[in-house]
Image 1 (cartoon, one colour):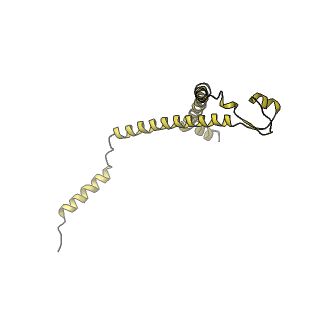
Image 2: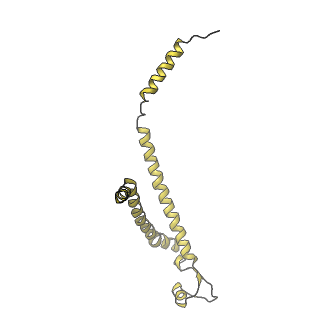
Image 3: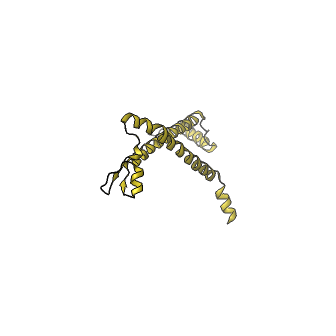
Length: 142
């Protein structure tokens, strides 16, 4: 049982998947930082909204100036600004994955095109020769 688990856990595909998950997590952190620290301040500056994450609707009927005041009061709220940030984050990740996958697919297609076709198996070559000989020796009957 231990031997089977060892073979499973250390196969190339399993290790590749583990590396992919770790790199994916790091990539997610980079994208989150890009959204939070670069894109959102730029977008907020353009549309004159200081920070999307501070956009909310309090459900208790009271008005709160900031998200901190809302949280201090313990009031329920719809935090649609955080949702907007998450949507932008998703779009960036989806676009980045599209670019990476598109690049990988093109690279694989170029490798396939560059590789010469494999010669047909010997059996197939012999069968083709037999077929060609039979066609050449066959006379039409009337």
